[in-house]
Length: 258
Image 1 (cartoon, rainbow, N blue to C red):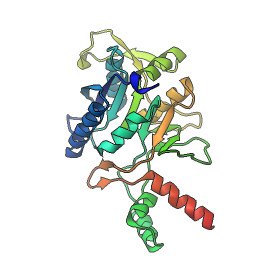
Image 2: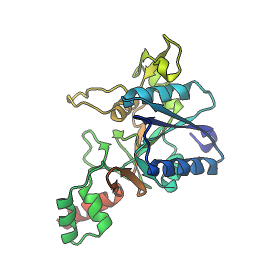
Image 3: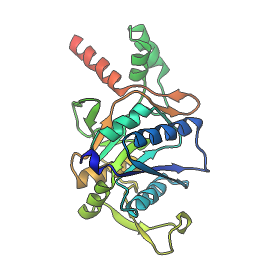
Image 4: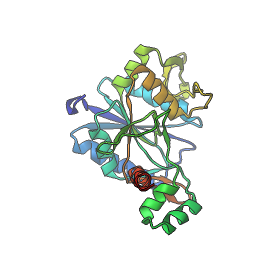
């Protein structure tokens, strides 16, 4: 896929009780700027529903219903993302690429230990933060220009192509499910279940985003990529965020010294 295939982006956000954060509003503006800077058009769709997989499926159905839409950009309602991140996602040229960002957690004891070991604050945060990322049997992660092939990424900040959705349909990794009239669909309308939660072969209950990634990799092996970059904050009581690349560098430096 080349930039000529980047036609129109649907920015999609599932919400619960219609709530978004001020950081999300900033993210939305940054995404629109990044898309416009590449000469592309964008549309916006939010769906308020308590179950995120259902909301994501309806957003993807809407994208497939408009031939001009080539990409879907998911931004969750609790994310604060810099424009440079969206620039990188759009430039990645991958079927699916998601930012590798932290959960709304940090291990303060691990942070304190990292600081005592001489790490700078940014590195200590990265070492003390759990990242949303799925790796199945990988002993080494190869990162080039911030990108790494992975098994699953979170959809808090993720860009995927509608070509990938069609490939998943053709490969039979997505099944049909009834759509919701509350989402504006006619009664009896069927949509594709891309995000329904799955159980992995190891018996692990997968989240909706990891379930999508498992289906995508089954249809198009190697289609899921992660972006290791600063500038992605997961907002809650505080803004949680760290650079996954910083964590990898610290771990590899420690391994070389051992």
